[in-house]
Length: 250
Length: 224
Image 1: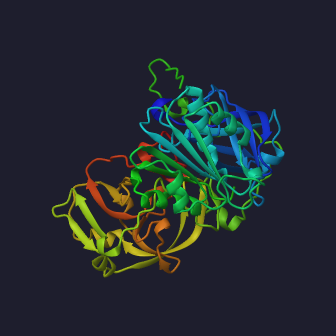
Image 2 (image 1 turned 30 degrees about the vertical axis):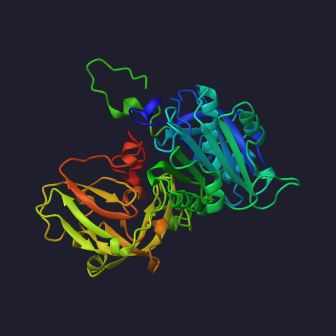
Image 3 (image 1 turned 90 degrees about the vertical axis):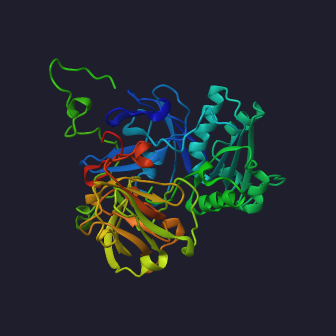
């Protein structure tokens, strides 16, 4: 679906749960089979609609975690304890259940297979989800675009996709992984151990001359710090694309 | 989208949608949801939920324009472009408004309190043949609206939220406030608007979002 040309209305589609994988204590990945899914670009999101027996409905938006894969898509959902939708998705949903999806949505925060230069992915917490879709899409395409992922999580156990990221980076000199663990670090930890600040960004971010685009996704204070930090370091604001993950409502 | 054209019949909207709007969607097994109280439910458009927070959404870094460099201008299909410095803008009559706002990402916020200059005030004495406005902003963001959605007490250029100067991440020093449309139309960091004869899609409108954006009709995306 290059160019995200959507003709006509994005219809609600029935999506059958085909797989549920725990990622961390707070997040699960849910795989759906969605007949009629028009395909997506890495970084796009999807609307989710739940319907109660009395007809009450709730909708939320989630980033797609998976690369393009026919009629299958995966969402990674962080459980928000006081949320209305996310606890249902993470705790209640079982393989074989059906919910509704509508998408893909968003044509801006998306992986560009023709990017010239280095792509910088910066994720805070579950903000890594659309960036993971990009890393997966990049791998699926066999892309050589130099890509660096800076991933800020609270602890090592809060790192979503840890094994897969390690695997992706191990087999690919073009993909760099840099972690910062803001709350606790395992013994012998050699990565960063603080919130992303200007000094950290200066060390990790590609130089302005080689940056193709930066994708920044996370909670608002994280995105504000990273995006303004990149501008302070001399990056062109138009090359810094942001997306926010609020813990709101969920 | 796999359309089959019925002979001789013009293609109608309803035929594009395999699932009729009145058809009962599948029940999500075990989902009960958090029902809204009756008082607020008629103020919350379809597909929205109420939040007490004020989430931030923007496509790029937050611009920080100094007030002495800030101005607001009305350009395009006008006899003479108009321009206000920050001081001139702040000398205009202001209005305090309490409105509900609805973001296309599903949250709604009830009774948000703003202070701003009515767009009617800004347009006073301006003759235009344009029927559309293309607000433009620091950071390059644009959006598009019919001019009639900005006039008649429906829109403001807001500089204060909840009694405080509008914070940069929420669009300060000034943002458009058009509460009856999805909130992406309420452009942050607004610096002016170009009036035009034609309706030219703005930033999100070229990126998959609806050209008009009425939350009560759930006009979120292209084709809604």
